[in-house]
Image (cartoon, rainbow, N blue to C red):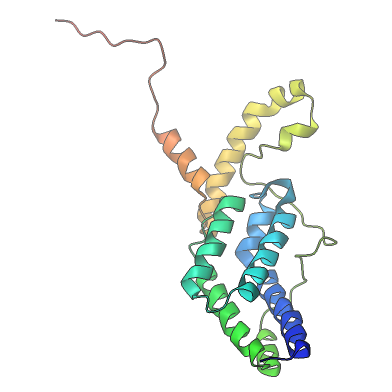
Length: 201
């Protein structure tokens, strides 16, 4: 049985490992920067990281598939984003591997591997400001304006946002479910209400 000192050391170090991996997860950062999680996207991303850490340390014998399902569901619910670039399986594999190594106190090996990751600035912290460049129709954008102003700019802003959403999604290889629904809706035009087709006998 691990001593309380070892346990504290493990929890502290594994938390740092989770933070390093999440701070390097490009898809999560893109989802936040593109406003997929709304105005509090960065806070939501931090919560996803916290939840993943708690899930990993709170459960024994987690399979990669189980952890993958948890993170995929969080990304879908919170960011309406499906990651199809294999980043989530890779993250889950590393998290579970490093968890076992951390439990065995193999910190030098973990540090050697993590030091190969790009040394970007940690952004999953409340004191770091993230610049938002929304690609989707931001439903909360009208909140700061008067209703009249929102109506004036509503149409053109939404249309251009929708085009941007499709372009950005295809160029970055990420397509959200809402965008897929929008594209399908655009392709299928329903007849206007109140019109009836009359055929001659």
